[in-house]
View 1 (cartoon, helix red, strand yellow):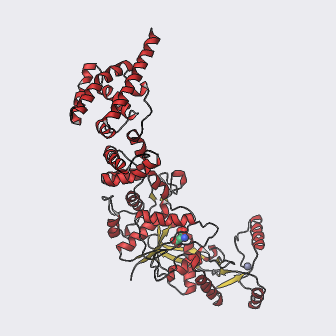
View 2 (cartoon, helix red, strand yellow):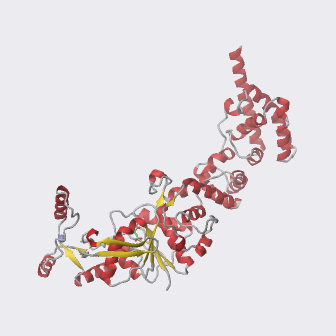
View 3 (cartoon, protein in one colour):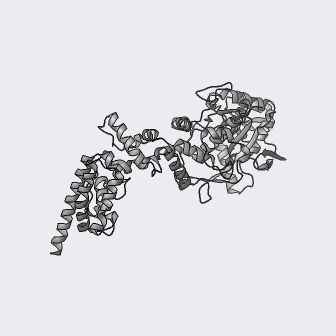
Length: 501
Ligand code: GLU
Ligand code: ZN
């Protein structure tokens, strides 16, 4: 039998780590078993629906390189795949249950239900929820009410006694007393829209879904869905409720832990291949050795028997580490493309022609590749190449434990050495060696020789490797900045001298 699985999000918010994990597990399971991955949009809750969320769903899957075999946009034999376009189907099936005595019309007004709720609360009644008032209305009364133009809801007759069991391949049998199941949930609302339960069950059946991989928070709906499948005379799919995604404190992952929307991760500069790889490892592992998987590999090796029962921990630091690893795997050209939007957004590429941008980017990418954790780090690391940094003050020009006097002497000595090396065509290593040799002569540490140059050139005490940075920046700019710093140090020394004298 062909595996058919689906990702069925409700477009009521941005795609988050937990949702994407569900999508990936379904997708990889479909691919590795030669089956079909179906995307279905469960948009029947119109009060929470937003166009932005739907667009975000498409963008996110697209960014991750996840293509659906059937669903919105691409179509397929079981369409439409957007629930709000399937209302007639749900209405027909709900009516069918009423005709067979397995569901019923309820005419209760919202005022009556509200009063009922208040009363149950006030009396601490053990019965919460609907009181099944309309479950046994006389058929003639029902006719009369319908004819009078009232718009009823349709409720499911949940058996009052007995229990319902469903099997989950990870969790085993899950049994619930029918008396504990919500008394007669609404299947179809008075405006003709289905509730989640009805639409979900009908679509999984009509779309030939063989396995339901979804978050554990849906377990409580399981027994109800099984009752619905039975009512329709259908066999439920195989259930596999996925382990929870936790933060490192063992609580369900939420905004408290940090960003959870994929859009945020994308904006910070996580690579899709890193996110995809890491998120798939939250609650799934191949063996205890291999951690790095490309999408193509996962499409081959993912199996559901390797999904863990225990909750998975989403560790932000680990994701960051994965991201760094994937950044280093990218070619310089591809990384240059990837960082470009960040520099653009920071306004650093303004007034530069395409060719210059391309050259500069290819120049800086190798300098920062080793140290980038997320793409957005690039902006501050390479700002000095694209814009004049604020002239560093004397303190910034001095290495730890070195005075402005020492650094002035060092820079006065080092500048001509550097300049001669660069202009004379020496290799970086040779120039560095010449600079290092100045330290004992000046009676300072090596760091004391390099710091004023580094701070002059980059505006900061930490920078990418110095000589390669200078080459990307250009000699002229480098010399200008060093000369400016010489002035700064001279002023600082003079001011100090004035104070002392
Ligand atoms: N629309 C539900 C959601 O938002 C689908 C749950 C399910 O997979 O059955 O997650
Ligand atoms: Zn009623």
